[in-house]
Image (cartoon, rainbow, N blue to C red; front, side, top):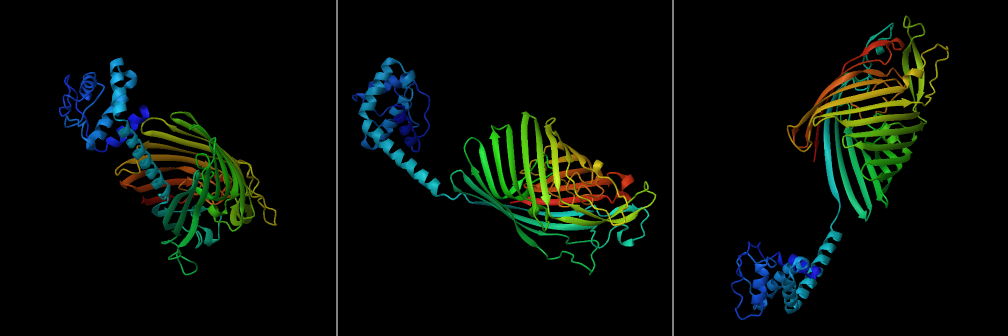
Length: 490
C-alpha cells in the first residue's frame, strides 16, 4: 500500500498543484452527489486524511481524470497507519475502485526510473578545470647573501650569474577528472611553466628563460576506492605529508594506499620516485607514511615519515671556517639527496578567525658530505638536522568570494639538513635555506592574502632571514626575500 501511495504521489505531483487547508465540508465540489465515493471523500476530507487540489475540484467520474482520483487515494493511503478504523475502511474501498489507475502509475514510474538510470549511466563523468599564476620572488633560492666575510672571490660576494637574485614566473595548469568504472576514478593535470622571465642578473652568458616554456604531466593518478575505507592510488600521484614541511601537493611516481577510519583518522603509506617533483636527473626512491587524526572539532594532529635514497648529488662551493670565524676558505662539498625525515605537526582553529599551524621535523639521514683533499674541517652537521615552522593566521578568506582576506605571520628555524631547500617540495613560500646541506635559515615572514575577485587571489609576503648558525656560516644575513603571487582558477 505504501509503495502505491509513493508511486502515485510522485507521478501526479508533476501535474497537480499544492493543496489548501480543508473546511469541514467536502471541498471536492464536482463529485456527483449520487456517486458512492461522495461519503468516503467527505469523511476523509473532514478527518484530514484526504487532501484536495488547488482548484478545489475532484473529477472522480471522468476517465481522463481518474488518475487524479488515484493520486488522491494514494495520498490518503500514506496516512493509513494513523487513520481511524472507519477511514481505513474507506481507503481500502477506494483502492479497490482505482486499482487499475494505481497499477498503471506504478508501471509508468518504473519506466521513468529506468530511463533516468540509463541517462545517468550514459552521462560522462569527465570534468576539466584550471588555474594560472603570475609570481615574483626576490632571492628565491637564498643564494643572495650579505657581507661574505673574508671573501676575495667577487663572483660570490653577493650573487653571480647563476645565483638569481630576483625573478618572475608564469604557470598554467589544466586538470581533468573522470570515472571510467564504478569505484574507479582518474585525476590528471598538465602544467606549463615559464621561469625567470625577468631576471635581474640577465646577461648573454646564460639563458634568461624568455620563451622557454616547459610542459609536463604534473599528475596522472588512478584511484581505486575499495571496500572498508581503503583507497589505492597508482601513477603520478599528488602527495602531501603532515603540515607540509617535508612534502606538499607535489607529484610522486608510485603507489599509495590509504585507510580511512571514519572521517577523523586517516592512515596512508606508499613508495615511489620523487624526481618528478624535485627536478633531479636521477631517481629519488622514497618510502613514506602519513597519519592524520582529528582529536577535536578544532584540532588535527599529524605525523609524517619520509625516507629517500637518491643517486643525485650536488657539488657546492661553500665557505667554511675552522677557527671560529676568523678565517674562511672556499671548499668543495658533495651532498647526496638522502632523507630520513620525521615530522610532527598540528593544525588548530583557535577561534572563528584565528588559526595556527605548527610542525617540527628531524632528518636523521647521513648526507655523506665529503671534504676537500686538504682535510680542512668545515663543520659538523649534527646540529643542523632539525627544523621548526609555525604560521598564525587571522581572517576568514573564502576562495569563491571577493573581498575576503587573511593576514599571517610565520616563524621558522631550519638547519641545513632539516628540509629540502634545493628541490623545494614543501609548502613554504621560501626555500628554507640556500640549498640542502648548506647554511639553513632562521627568520620570520609577514603576509596578506586577499581575494581581489571570485576565484582570484593576491598573496604578498616579506621575509627576513639569517643563516641557521652565523658562527658556522661565512655571511651574516640573507638578502631580504619578497614574494607576490596573483593566482586565479577557472
